[in-house]
Amino acid sequence: MKASRLLSILMILQARGHRTADQLAAELEVSPRTIHRDVDELSAAGVPIYAERGRQGGFRLLDGYQTRLTGLDADEASVLMLSGIGTALGDLGLTDALSQTERKLMAALPKETRVKAAMVADRFHLDPLGWYRKKEETPYVISIAQAIWADQRISILYESWKGPVQRDLDAIAVVLKAGVWYLIGRDQTMRVYKVANIQSLSILEKKFERPPDFDVSQFWGEWVSSFEGRIRPNRARLRVTQKGQNLLKGMGLTPIAHFSVPDQPDVTDIDLAVEGEANTVREILSLGAEAKVIAPQTLRSAVQKEVFRLAAYYSD
Picture 1 (tube, rainbow, N blue to C red):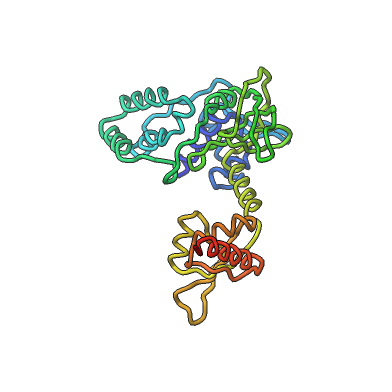
Picture 2 (spheres, helix red, strand yellow):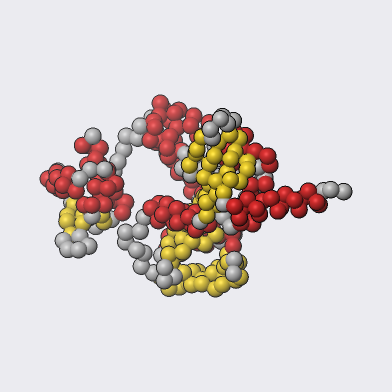
């Protein structure tokens, strides 16, 4: 365990250049004191690692130092062979590089490890798109990726819900969620842009300084939570059948809470985060007789009104 942690510290510093004791401790799930002891042991073993003092201090490897790491086991090799799952690398223009990497990896592995890695690659495939959905055209993903690798600013014409807007941005990162590409860009603040909504893009000559402690997975997780809270700020209580709960699951809607209904074992009351009234009415009507609005009364009345309107529409 300790040897693995020492190797992890070495690999993290080699890949990222600089990390504080607190950052290393959080990544490796140990205390900062343990990190300091580990760094002392690495230094004593001849690894050119040094500490930087001050507020932005931390640990860094001597410039130019590289370590050769060999001995991939079968599971580690299998993980590398899964690096190209789905269409992400193709969208980024890295399909050829992936093929060459896989060939080099397979040629370098021992026979037993090579067999396991090839088996995983042959038996696992990821299709990131939902059913009945076509892939959105995103012609600017490669240009965005080029700007991100080079820390260059970009200028985009973006089709927002308010209309077209022109923005000059720092291209910080891209995220692929459920088959849809998103750009994390910084103007004065960090914002998220759907790449398919970019109407035009040009890479500017000006470079930018990347935020040193930016963590894309942490930012994305916090942004998604905030976005979902904004997009579904209201609450509704529904009485649903088991089929209704299955339909909600298929719609990607997860109840906040469940409540049993006395003397009615075939139904359950649930609290659900919902959007504005119009969208919520459409979602509830798609459940048919498998769900009934209990509260709020305004939503219940809106559903009733739409049901009466539909009945009148089909009365002939």
